[in-house]
Image (cartoon, rainbow, N blue to C red):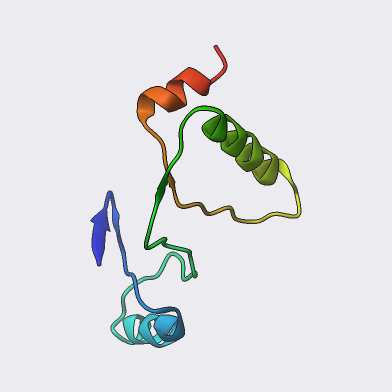
Length: 87
């Protein structure tokens, strides 16, 4: 469990998602959302042309009305990201 600004994020195994949510409800804990998300166990450093291509792909996926969520497992240095952003 992690505390964020004004709420907690509870992480559990996918198969336990609804069991945990039901138990929290029984304890009168207000739930703002119950959802499954992808949390990578490994990440990949991305730089240069690969970073540029990856960001282009992610933008295209996020702009597609048929895509509801986009997850990734890449790490990109802030300076790399800034260099690729349009001026």
